[in-house]
Image (cartoon, rainbow, N blue to C red; front, side, top):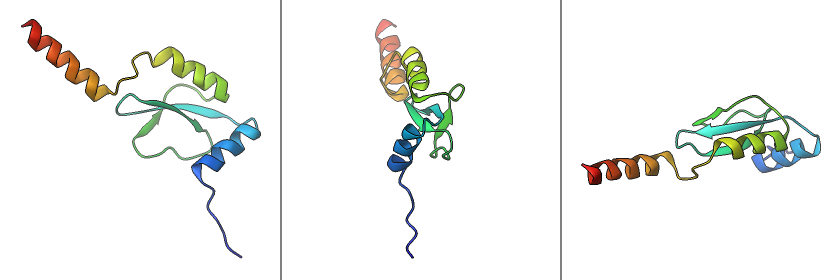
Length: 86
């Protein structure tokens, strides 16, 4: 018998079908995603707020993530703007 590891995509779809609980997660660049609660978070990602349905997590992300640029780009642009002003 062959044991096959379930992929992250398959696990996500299974969680959706089961009405499972999800997490809003964020990485060091301020990028957000939705992740099945029962899965270990990928390296570099942390939970942002409480667990909920997929829709609740997406709504939370929509409220929080207003600037879609990665954090490094925002920092670079704010530094360049400060230098131009000075």
